[in-house]
Length: 445
Ligand code: HEC
Ligand code: HEC
Ligand code: HEC
Ligand code: HEC
Image (cartoon, rainbow, N blue to C red; front, top):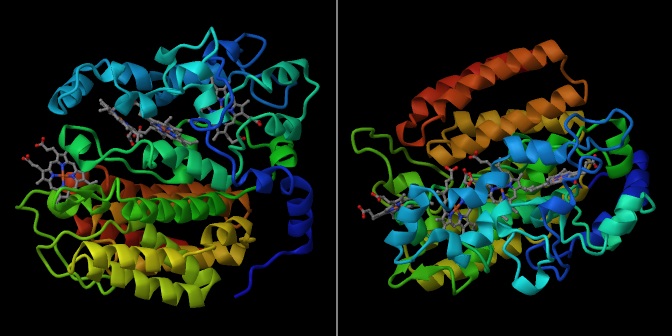
């Protein structure tokens, strides 16, 4: 199916995004970009973003600092490094103090080089405003004076976090990692928690500090939860393949890097026996399998919007799984072939005009995959649950379901959330039952 653009969609696209967002696609994340970071204090004034209550007469909430400081785990990310848990991880890795190590600070703070820190900058602020919004040195002045609009701010170094591709790259740069910062299985073995991520769900559980109202949409576009979810999946797949192809990250001695594999294939109680075959990998019992939760989600997306590509990607995904039974070179070749097969998919999903019919079909696809046994692994069930959340959100936002229906369906989805609450106690049969309930609730749409 060709990429669809209706007239209004392409008009909005042309006026809102070309020149601002599209040009930013290549934008370096704030960690890498050259701009100087001023520090959280420069954003936190009570007449800036540190108001106690949202303003009624402003385009933005103005209390972003308070939300970040009081509710957002990013403000405590540095303090996490001072805990016994972090000190233990550091000790297990032969390091001195976690809070002095770039290895930890790179993700638990806005750890830009010293020459990119202005006078008021404090590393102890953790993942501060500029770690996501970009070094403010070139945009703060005009931004405060009210002279600059969003496009001018972007041109002076504000990071385009409203753009799903840019946002996915930003979040995953810490929530999965890049060539510059990465949580290896060694670090997890020392005690670091597993990293899980879904762009739409995590944007709102951060919690979000925006009100997506008419004014927001007129300034930044009306991007649905389904689209944000879709782009997040494609960028996650790309990040995984990139890491598998990176010789600095893809092995540890004679072993492959184990974070590319399904954690729970190795880590679950032996009394909780649950292995089941899956057509999409055909890896036998007792063998670790490559982590593929995002690939499963991308497959569901492609089956709807580009069935030809879906077929190619399915073949190459299975080939990657099979290559893991052969050896290092086979995996590299298969990962490269899969990367080639997914070439362009991020842009395709970012510019695709998702209709109500698409959202319905995607929900049906999501349920079908699950009921056919694709979610036997915990991570797939976890991704499927968050995907369903994003879909229900778009359904209510687009008026496909009423508020009441949304509340009812969310209550049904809660059974899926309960089934994934404790990863090590995950029981695929319990999840399947929850999915069946969701399926019988959904056709009434
Ligand atoms: C500079 C690195 C960095 C970036 C960029 C980043 N995060 Fe995080 N994030 C973290 C760290 C570190 C934590 C854990 C904080 C803690 O508890 O110490 C975290 C925690 C979270 C949590 C809480 C997770 C939980 O299990 O409770 C959410 C939600 C989240 N981030 C969402 C996002 C989103 C959405 C983005 C992109 C808009 C993003 N993050 C970008 C580093 C980052
Ligand atoms: C590639 C980025 C990255 C690196 C490097 C990294 N972390 Fe994390 N860390 C995260 C993210 C993201 C989370 C939040 C995970 C979640 O809840 O989804 C986190 C969570 C944690 C937590 C749990 C926090 C909580 O609230 O429960 C601890 C403890 C921790 N990290 C310590 C460390 C230490 C110590 C180091 C250095 C050895 C380190 N991290 C290196 C990204 C990173
Ligand atoms: C973990 C990443 C992250 C951190 C840290 C962060 N933000 Fe944001 N911020 C976002 C995302 C994502 C959005 C929503 C997308 C958008 O509109 O750019 C956003 C949106 C905003 C907006 C735009 C609201 C609108 O209506 O256009 C403002 C203003 C803002 N943030 C201020 C702040 C301030 C001030 C801080 C620090 C106290 C901060 N942010 C910290 C990720 C972050
Ligand atoms: C191929 C099997 C395998 C895979 C896949 C795997 N691990 Fe491990 N993991 C191990 C082994 C082996 C150890 C070492 C156990 C020991 O020392 O007792 C270990 C240790 C750990 C530990 C420390 C356990 C302890 O007792 O201190 C954590 C935490 C951990 N892994 C997390 C993960 C996460 C998260 C993932 C997925 C991203 C993952 N592992 C994937 C095999 C695996």
